Amino acid sequence: MTFRVARLHESDWQLFAAMRLRALTDAVGEDDSSYHEEVIFTAAQWRRRLRDHAQFAALLEDRPVGLIGAQLESAEVVYLYSLWLEPTVRGRGLARRLVAAAVDWAGECRVRTVKLRVAADNAVARGVYESLGFRADENTAPDGELAMSLSVS
Ligand SMILES: CC(C)(COP(=O)(O)OP(=O)(O)OC[C@H]1O[C@@H](n2cnc3c(N)ncnc32)[C@H](O)[C@@H]1OP(=O)(O)O)[C@@H](O)C(=O)NCCC(=O)NCCS
Image 1 (spheres, helix red, strand yellow):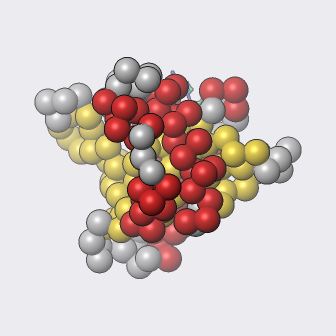
Image 2: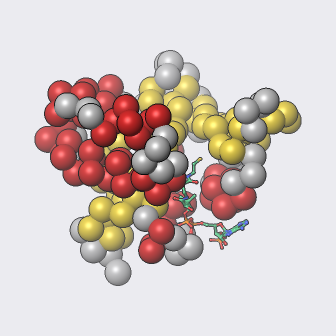
């Protein structure tokens, strides 16, 4: 099986929109406010998201099966968000490779730290991040989320 990670560009906005809406449907459901907000995005809004942040797609045999977003938050920090893999391809180590590609990009941006937030009870996602060297803050936020960070300098 050929697996690769590709950064998406503005011209990929239709693929990005379809993947993102699939991810939201699976992860939070179509009743969620994020889904309501994004399902009516225009082409210009999807394109802007691809301009503003780096979006990476996981491709298995050239079929898009996952996404992660990466935002250059400051000169020192890249923030990763919205990791998602299609349920049928989970459990094969692909999420780790997708996150690793985003971390590599952060390294190319010459930041010091990669940060993210994860639900404290999401053991699978935490396992993926920890296997790449991310460490969790001491305290869980009141919303049940845990901040994790990785030093890349
Ligand atoms: C989180 C997610 C991307 C992981 O995808 P995946 O393909 O299963 O991840 P990987 O196969 O790369 O790694 C999973 C690891 O967790 C481990 N794992 C599986 N179930 C586990 C559990 N219940 N508790 C702890 N670890 C677990 C696996 O053994 C594997 O580790 P290993 O390779 O050392 O054996 C996927 O489950 C997903 O899309 N979930 C919904 C969205 C989500 O939660 N995103 C994260 C937001 S922060």
